Length: 218
Image 1 (cartoon, rainbow, N blue to C red):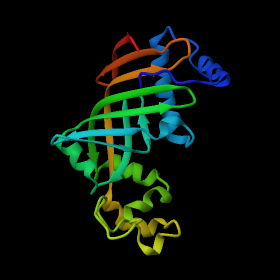
Image 2 (cartoon, helix red, strand yellow):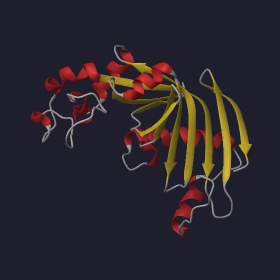
Image 3 (cartoon, one colour):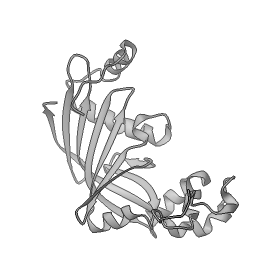
């Protein structure tokens, strides 16, 4: 995102107020993790729906995912997915992934890179499964593997739950299709778009702790 986007005076004021101490990379980094945490709960937050990119066997893939949980202390992100989906095979083949977040209100882009892990039958998957609302788990009742060719438009939901949210007892069989992707972030690239000039910073991590903080030319 190299070009400057036009902004309204109100949005500019909100951005300036939110990033009140732009000369301090530590403040910017802390704010990024705070906004990521907010995105887990706030459906209106721009960072709630990042793009997750994988690369395996020479094939690049991107898809929009829902940020479900973060652990700022260990620098980890969590989303869930169908265990049968191609992205799980991609990550098993190559655990290096990239994330792209953009908040149109704050005019802030965040790129994260790191290594991902697939969780199925462990505490991570169990905890997120039990914490999620039934409406978020209904899709794991899908009778067809995601991406399967069909002769007509397909919701990939059983007829019994197409018009309603199932209760927990009806979701028992869905658990086998449920997986969590966790990612340990290794680097973060932050970009703020401003009418008077963009700002960019990079942060790297080792063992969950901040290793370096650098200003970059936008």
